[in-house]
Length: 70
Image 1 (tube, rainbow, N blue to C red):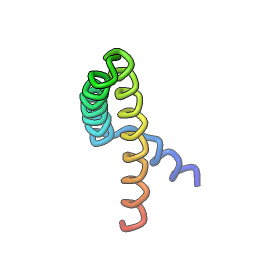
Image 2: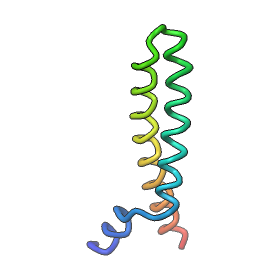
Image 3: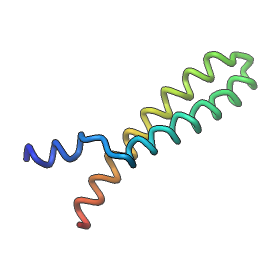
């Protein structure tokens, strides 16, 4: 059980790549939304935070699916 938890929480190169893509996509989307609501800083910050959260969830999901299949 402890080994599975360590594998799940360890940071790999793929996790860092997912995080970078998540931050980039989130901030870009946030800037676009911020432009339409006339509040660029809020959109930028909200997009960055959501990008980090979504990339973390996706990374954990990929690890769980990979351990079930492999």
